Image 1 (cartoon, rainbow over the protein chains, first blue to last red):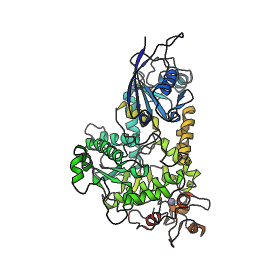
Image 2 (cartoon, each protein chain N blue to C red):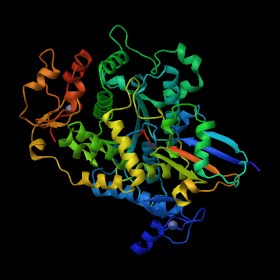
Image 3 (cartoon, rainbow over the protein chains, first blue to last red):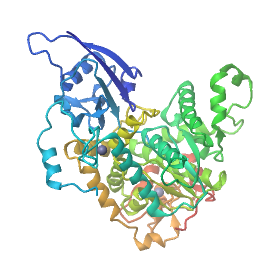
Image 4 (spheres, each protein chain N blue to C red):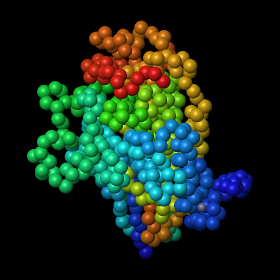
Length: 102
Length: 418
Ligand SMILES: [Zn+2]
Ligand SMILES: [Zn+2]
C-alpha cells in the first residue's frame, strides 16, 4: 500500500521547491524489498521528484545539508532515529533551513 | 533541582536511540521529548519553553542595561531569529508573563531588496508579509530601506505598507508612495546603493558592506528618529560563531568582543543581542513548536552577483558541517568569544572607523590612506592592527564616490567614544 505523507519546507528551503511550502505526496510500494521507507529513502526521493533547483543547497550525500533541521510529527528527528526513522502513513515531515536570515 | 545523573544522560545519548521509540524529557522525566537543546538534552515542549524563556530573560537580566519604560528599537528582518525575538518580547510584555519585561519596543524592518536585486513586486510582497506580522503584535512598527543610509534615514509606519496591500490601484495614483523612489533630480538612493554594491569586487566585500550599512542605518534611525539608545537584534549563537571565525579571517579579530558580545557599544546607540546564547537549531525548534511564520528572503546566504564563496559563506558552511558531526561545535566556539576583551588601546583610542564604526588604534600607517582615499579624505577605515584588513579590504578598489559620501558623512548618529 502506498504511504501518504505530508512534507513541509520552511525557513527558505521552500524556495528550492517552487516556493511551495506544503506537499502532500504518496510514496509508492517498493518492488521486491521490504516495504519500508526511511527518511534516508525519502530524501533521495525528494531529490529525484520534488527538488526544482540547486540540489546542493538541500542534499548532501544521503542526508540533508548541514543546517537543515528535520522534524517528524513535530519531533526532532534525532530523537526518533534520524535517517533510519521508518515512515508511517500520514506522517508530517518538516524540513526547516536555518542557513540565513536574522 | 534540575540536576540529573550525568552518566545516565551520557548513556542514553551514546547508544543509538531505538528506532521510532519515544524518548522522555530529561527535565520532567515524564513527558515525551520533542526537541533537543543544550547540545544533547531531550526536552518536552513545556520544559523546552521554560528553558528558552528563562535563558532569554537571564541574558537580559544579567545586563541590567534597559531601564523601566525605556523605548527600545527591535530590528525585525522577518527571518527566524528576529521572528523568535519578536515573539519572546511579546510574550515577556504580556500580562501573563511571570516576570514581565518592562521596556517599550518599537519594531523596524529594513527593506534590502535593492542589494538582493529583487524586482519591486517581490520587494513589496516581502514588505507586506513582514508588515502583517508586525501589525499583529500591536507594537508600533516602521519600515525603512537600506538606501536610506544615503538619504537621511527616513522611516515610514508599516500601516502604509499594510494599507497599500489591499489597494494597489489607489496607491499608484496617490502620492508619494513610500515603496517607490521619491527623490527627484538628485540621484536616488537606490541607484547609489546599487552602484556601490556593483563596484564591490568580492562576495566578502559585499556581505561586509551590507553589515556595516545595516548597522549605520539602524543606529542613525534609533538616534535621529526615535531618540533611543538601544537596538535589539536577533543574532544567534550559530551566527555569532560564524562571525567570530569570519572576523578573524578578515582581520577584524581586534573587535570581536563588540561584534559578538551581548552589548555592542561602539557607538552611542547600543546594539544588544538577547538571543546570542541560542544556536540556530533551538531557534528553529522554538519557531516550529510555536508555529511562527518567518519570512525568508533568500534560499541561501549569498548575495546576487557573488559566488557565495565569501569568507562569511564559507565559514558558515564550515561551522554547519562541523556542527552536524560534533554537536558542541557552536557552543565551544561561542564560549571562546566570551573570554575575549577589547584591548585597552582600542578602548581609549578615540578614533573610529567611519564604515563599521569600530574603534581603531591611533597609530596607523600612511598606507591606509593610499588604499581607500581618493579626494583627500582624511578619515581612516578600521585599522585595528598593522595586519588588519577589515573595512580597508572591503573598500579597496571602490573608488566610487558613493562610498566616500558615506565615509564623509556626519557622525551625528554614532560617536567615537566608547
Ligand atoms: Zn519535560
Ligand atoms: Zn571598519
